[in-house]
Length: 246
Picture 1: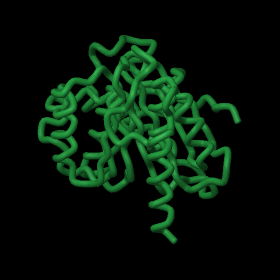
Picture 2: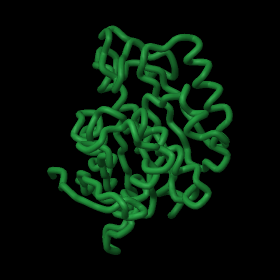
Picture 3: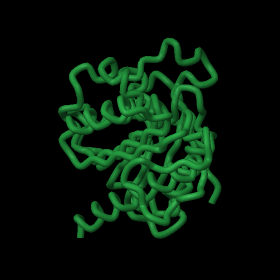
Picture 4: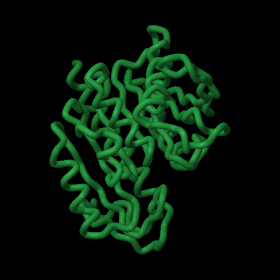
């Protein structure tokens, strides 16, 4: 099924947002995922399209959308802590407005760069912390975290997947370990070496430096690796949550 163009208001109603909705293409699980883009890549990007299509094939409702600055003023005056979370809240409210037959009961967030930071910020908000079961943060700008969450993420209750897809140094790896060590729930770190923004390959003979799965994803482009391990994590999390409801 092709993605369906949708429009909806931000949480405060001050901005109109544009998204693409992917209904489940297999038996619905009552789960939903919201995919948030980065600073410079709109919702039509291959990474976001593949994540949503994959989530739909797992039985989840999937939504990808653009932040309000896309096609307008640009990101220079955009504050992820304010407008970013307001835009994400609008996407969440949109999915919450569905009729009883397809209304999701479990919510996951997948964000890239800016989108990852915004997703973690809203999942840490005390008013919404219990509403999100998992957050996958791809290319998270760890060095900017102190600005985006000056008090850390003490309220975060969601499971976290951190996928860093830029050229990784020992310092960057230590930074990721330190970030995850301060989170209160289950976490997982994946490092994809030799990649640029959005998992674009800088070389094709990469090997993941952590938690590799023998015989799986070798000889695949880095984008494939990032998409498949994220969807694998998503399927695992939703299966856990669905089983808990039985």
